Amino acid sequence: MEGFEFEVVHVVSLWAFVLAALFGFVANKTNFCVMGAISDLLHIGSTGRLGAWLFAAGIAVIGTQILSLTEVIDLDRSIYLGPRLGWLGHIVGGLAFGVGMTLAAGCGQRNLVRVGSGSLKALVVLLVLGITAYTTLRGLLGLLRIGVFQAPDTDLARYGIEDQSVASLLAAISGAEAGAVDTLRLVLALILGIGLVAFSLSRPAFRRNADHLLAGFVVGGVIVGGWYLTGRIGNDDFDPVPLESMTFVAPTGNTINYLMTFTGSTINFGIAAVLGMIGGSLAYSLLSGGFRIETFSNRSEMVRHLIGAVLMGFGGVLALGCTIGQGVTGLSTLAIGSLITVPAIFIGSAMTMRTEYHMLDEHSLFVSLRMGLEDALMPWRAADR
Image 1 (cartoon, rainbow, N blue to C red):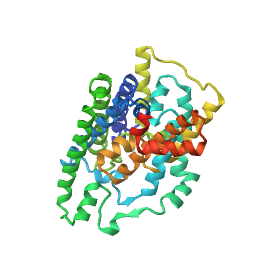
Image 2: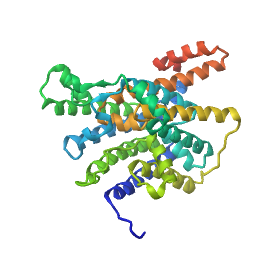
Image 3: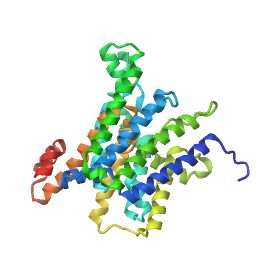
Image 4: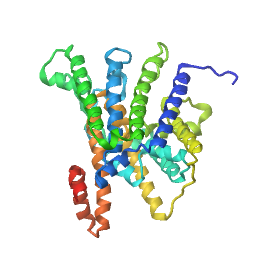
């Protein structure tokens, strides 16, 4: 194209598309789905897909921390390790996202994969999710986000804590010297990363299923690849790109805006990743013969999906990520916010699933909510009921 200059951001975006296409292809093939993993655990006691998620997180933690500790990337530049801890946003946003992804039959990542398989339901979900996310970032809902949910943010710098990594918090609490933070990060990375991998491999339903193993390896590897791509290749001296890896809530909103304002916009890592996820999933659907047009079966199903999409868009921005953005990418930074958000997403999703299950037994809404919350906090009880 005449006058077009190929810059660092375009190189990063091209490779982001490739990484995300691999993610989408494998996620479609293996049925990788975090909401599905929670459902399997609660309803049939299976830990296969849960193992794939935890294995991916373990690989991401180990790989990301190796890149950071060897100074290949500077994780302090990421949004997850800022000194302001938005604890209320992480809690409320995580819960809202968990409820939303259950109502919408999948998180942002899963709906991108479903779009590639021909689901018009997922396309509607993504449009509403993206618009809500963008409105929460830059529009009317931004006033609510800033005025209510970010108002009680804790500035860790006031307490002598440079960032919100668990290592920095432990170092401040213990009175350790500044040089001990890297050692703590290494120890924590080994404990958490190896622990997640070991737990996953201890589950027969995971280790005996080649698809689950493939999904875990690829998803974890893609997250590490994203960090390397933006932190190393994108770390241009004159125009560095933001340090980030895979996440799919805010980027979906940015993608919608990019497609509408193409001539005045610039592509970035997140936008390319959204498009790559759809492209990779589409490629697998066509190659496997699994492409099918899917629509809503009735009005109530559509309303349910729309509510879920709004909750995901709003909650994902509040929590700074989704099941991938916080559940794998954020967790790989060992951020306190991620350790708050991930359980909140799990509880929100599990509570919604179990509440709906108990309502089928003709319990009242409030009784079902109480039982659903108990099941979410103690999933082993749900599996035994």
